Length: 111
Length: 114
Image 1 (cartoon, rainbow over the protein chains, first blue to last red):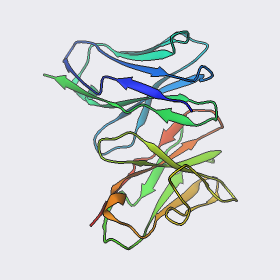
Image 2: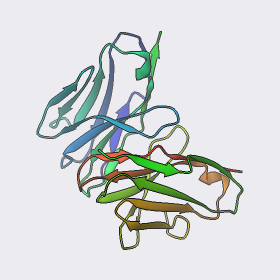
Image 3: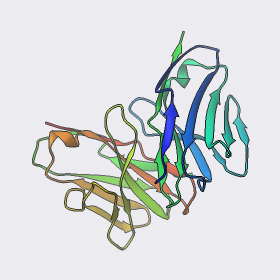
């Protein structure tokens, strides 16, 4: 079945710097890749997504890139702010229409 | 998108008892799911709640332990039966407005079993 690897598990970034989280997947048929942000005590919130017919998508300070050949996709957060501190999950749709989540990245924005 | 509410938001329960968690969506949705998230971990799919028929369970989860109801297109319940401390977790409801579309999550129910 589909497998999603997410790195790093923990990331500390100085406020104002950029953060990058990377994920790889195994099923070449996967065609939808959402990213979720989970703040403490809350459910995961969709922050950006990308489909396999697009290589990059941007929404203000957040961008996602997809390399289908290499089967990896990345989340980029620029000009990080304290409110960006959270756990981020990548995910992808598998062949059996099930969404598979990465193990998560705990992002700390340092003052 | 969809606005999802869950009740209760948290609970502390004694072992051997059962807890029913409710999930309400503000619009009709095609798919509803139940996930478990253990502390510091990722999300694990328990089952797909099917409207008008039995839920579809993932490997490692059974109906006797996690009975699920979905009486209509906006509401579902998950019961955690005969609880033990190992069931302490966050239980999350999620929905897809249409098949293959974005999945949205509720705020979760934080369960502690003593």
